[in-house]
Amino acid sequence: MVTVRRLGRSDADSVADALFELVARFATSFAPERSAFEVSLRAVLADDSAWLGVAHEEDGGDEAADRPVPLAGYCLGFDHPAFYANGRVAWVEEIMVREDLQGGGVGRSMMAAFEEWAAVRDDRLVGLATRRAAPFYAALGYEDSAAYFRKLL
Ligand SMILES: CC(C)(COP(=O)(O)OP(=O)(O)OC[C@H]1O[C@@H](n2cnc3c(N)ncnc32)[C@H](O)[C@@H]1OP(=O)(O)O)[C@@H](O)C(=O)NCCC(=O)NCCS
Image 1: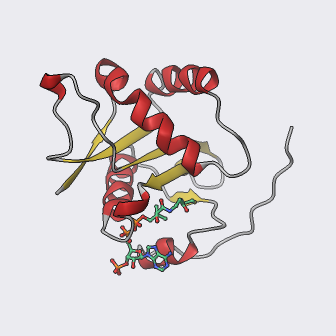
Image 2: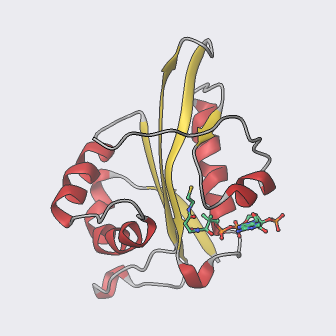
């Protein structure tokens, strides 16, 4: 059984190592550095318009015994005002499920939790860019809407 929860400032330290491991496996264009990750993590946790969800197996760790809590996955997204949508729009920035758990519904659960947060904030849509996971988003009811361009700075 996997549960998804929004990470808060009070419990971020206990999962930071496991989260960074997943972040490092998610990234393809960049090589994540721990010091930069720490800065971004603090910024995300202090930002009301950021949503960082983590998934973990209910029997997968023992915080009382001071053992690391393994993560099943994470999802990072944001929302912001947009003129075109007459309100706020939400975007998924990163989503990653541990390789041995992929295909078991963890990604779907994290996206549902993000969508729930976005709906409570009255966001008008959830968007994202993807190169690797189009069939996943299609299975969740997302439509192909635009091409994604970028320029590295
Ligand atoms: C993409 C990813 C987040 C999906 O999470 P997941 O837990 O494996 O997906 P789920 O098991 O929740 O799948 C949900 C649905 O999507 C479908 N799906 C997931 N990945 C799929 C794929 N590669 N091809 C086709 N369908 C896929 C599943 O069949 C399922 O549909 P169903 O419920 O109708 O059977 C995960 O595979 C992952 O971390 N991949 C590597 C990182 C990545 O690509 N992230 C996205 C970058 S934008």
